[in-house]
Image 1: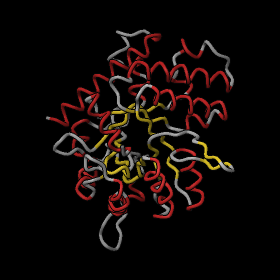
Image 2 (image 1 turned 30 degrees about the vertical axis):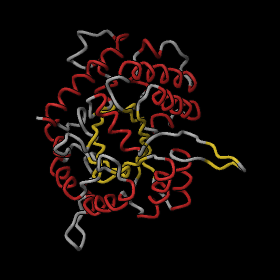
Image 3 (image 1 turned 90 degrees about the vertical axis):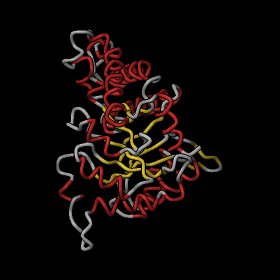
Image 4 (image 1 turned 180 degrees about the vertical axis):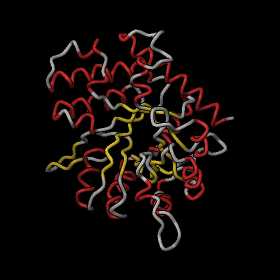
Length: 308
């Protein structure tokens, strides 16, 4: 089964077009978790693993996927990367799709190394070893086709997928992505057209490709425009919740079958126990229950906007 069909199947199964970003800043973790461990790299990694597993346990039946951002693991060195790997594998054991947010992009040989680590297998003499073995990764395409090609080759070989940065949700994205080319098209439009082309051979049963795109919720007009130029491209949509993206804006990226995108929420789910709407109902030690409650609220809000 192609990676995109696996993702869509989980979205349909859970009736939920959202995913949980797992970006564990140490200061965000509840003290009921961090107080169990020493304040060193190994202790932080143990706290992250406990926290992530609790959130996964509370949501795996209602959320189709997780998206761990690798920076929040790399910053804690080798123990942090071990926490990243354990988080990814634990979510897959629970049946969730894992999208590793790594934003890699480099010359062909280097891209091959990145792809070996996350999507494919690393050759070691006469054997090959799967390292992180996630379902999707995010990819930066701004060095051109040759920096994306190794990832696409592994998508074909191992039934994996990529989300290519097209129009990101951060405030300054327009400094480069909105610039006009001589043709009159914006750079992000050109990239969206390339993603649509790159994914032609990886389209699945639902008409979408495993070569997908990152398109931010904070720019609804561009979201709608990109949907028109890339009809077979699935969207990973960041920017909902804490960054200001609204459910009605997000709906512009979906098709008439309520497919076409999966919406990321990180802080609003991970720190739900701190939110005004939940802090009177849940104590700190109930953080996982608060995350589940917020996930269900988000699911209902998105479905109402997308399905009308």
